[in-house]
Each structure stands twice: as structure tokens, then as C-alpha cells.
View 1 (cartoon, helix red, strand yellow):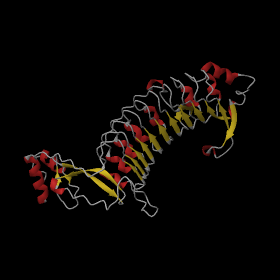
View 2 (cartoon, one colour; view 1 turned 90 degrees about the horizontal axis):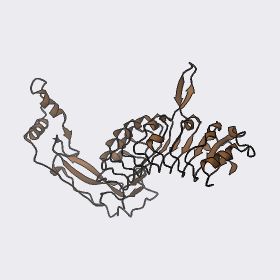
View 3 (cartoon, one colour; view 1 turned 30 degrees about the horizontal axis):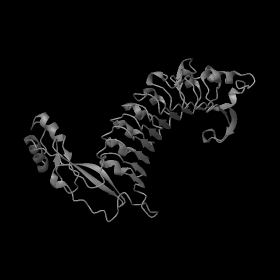
View 4 (spheres, helix red, strand yellow; view 1 turned 90 degrees about the vertical axis):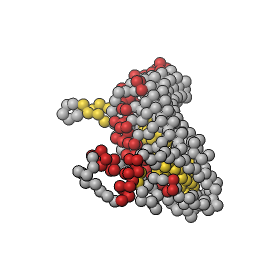
Length: 375
């Protein structure tokens, strides 16, 4: 065990005292003895300790004396055998809590991660100073809902668990910069992810995802999108709107690095054909001209994405996968919905540039993928 000082940007680079018990093979009893030892005098100086490192030990729980360290800001519990996070952890003014590689389940987390504070009116209110939470490498089976209470959280790491679903309330975490969910069992990403306006890195690799929500295109600050080792066959076409994206990882997906088209066109119904004719003619039936169900059907028309076609489709469409050229450097597969196979545009030549071998030159435009990993 050693006590040393370090600089931290989160504390305005002021001197910070750290208590390091890492990699000492301590069990809970031995750690309690260290903390309570009069000779070491740690409890007397507990108010000065802002960082405590308990990583890589044999802890199955947290010491009761932990709450004596009232000014603790960073707590590292990684690589132990901890099975329960007590409510007392939430009462500490933590900025960073690292509890990766333990035995935590959803039921072993506090029901609320907010600290309980007494208000001026005498009641209790909840708050949190937490900016970084790392629960990777545990035994979580679903996204911990209590995490969405942490409105100041910037970095959330939940990779390497058994999470199958992502909370639809994740949109509440408006301060998130990094969301890491790699190495889970996620098959679907909610549309609400697109509301994380500050998000810069989204890690979804090594999951079971087949389709990405179109709302991904609203993440205007996104710089890194890791999607490798999933079941993706295409990407939302609007992903090209992510002008700040500099890293896109797609390897180990059913994507192929060549032009692919997949037409699954069934004969259109008479209703479909009639609806298309009405739309093409420009007629606008009044509210009393046709039944309400038909009016609603006509209003559900989708426009063909071919800019040279003014046609529409309803339930019958051509699904076409096209590789979009990013500044002549990379080709990314995007899904298009067309009204007819005749609307498929011929692929433009790649201008002699190999998609996987092209390097980014310093003179290249800023609006391009600097790193697209397909293989």
C-alpha cells in the first residue's frame, strides 16, 4: 500500500491524495484491518483521500469503513469477486466508479444510484456527481435502468456482460460522450439512442444486431462507431450525414466488399397499383370522395429514393443494397427502398481506388471516413 499524489483534470489539476491497495491479494477482512489500523492512521486522514484503488484483489464485498472517506472521488474496484454494490457507495461524492470484471448482477446493484440529500424543506432529494461508470465484464442480463438517472454521466461502459436489451429511456442521459455496449447479446438498438446529442463514441461490436435505427444519423457529434462482429447486412442510408464520423468498424458482418443487390419483389396487389396510379396522376380525393381507410392508405405512400423517379410505393418495394462512395476512398453498403427494379442506378466505377487499401491523404476533404474497417 502506498499513498501518493497525482494531477487530475476533473479537480482543476490540484494535488490529489491516492490510497493504493491494488494488486495486494487482499480479502475483505485484511483490507478492513489495513483501514482501521491505528499505526497507519488512515481513518484520521480519510478526509484528504480522493482516490482509492482496490483493483486486482480477492474482495467479495466492500469494507464498512469506506463511508468514512467522505471526499472520495475516484474508486477502482476492478478485477475482484464483488457480488454486491452497497447503497453506501452512492452516498460518496464519486466522479469515477470502476467496478469492471466482478460478479455483479442486476439485482446486486443499488436500486438507485443517486445520493440522498436533505433539502431545505426537510425532505430528501436525489443527486449524483458521477461522470464515469464502468460495469464491464460482469453478469448483467439487461440494461440497468437506474443508470438513466445519472444525468451528469459522460462515460458509460457496460461491455462484456449478457445484456440483451437497451433501455428506451437512454435518451435521458443527455451528457453521454461515450456509450460502450460491446460484447453483449443485444439484437436491437432503440430509436432513442439517436437523441444522445453529445455522444462521440458508440461501441456496439460483438453483439447480435441485424438492423440499426435510422436515428443514428442524428448523432451529429459522433466520431467513432464500432459495429464489427454483428449480423449487419446493410446500414441506414442517412449515415452519410454523420460529417464528424472518422472511425467506422464493420468487419465480421455479412457485408461484402463489392456491389450487391438483393431484389425481393413480389407481384403488387391491385390496391398497390391503384394507389400508385392515383398518386402519379396528382389527384387529391376529398374527405367525402373515398372511404377513410383508403384515404389513410394513400397518405402512407413512400417516395422512391431514386432522384430521377417521382414514383411511390406502399407495401411493395425493391430492397437494393448499394455501396456509397465516400470521397472516392471508401465504399459503405447502404440500404435503399425503390418502387421498381427499373429505378436501380448503375454503379459508378471506383476510379481505380481499392476500398480496403486506400490511405487517407493529408489533402483529403474533412467530410470522409478516415478509418473504415471492413475486413
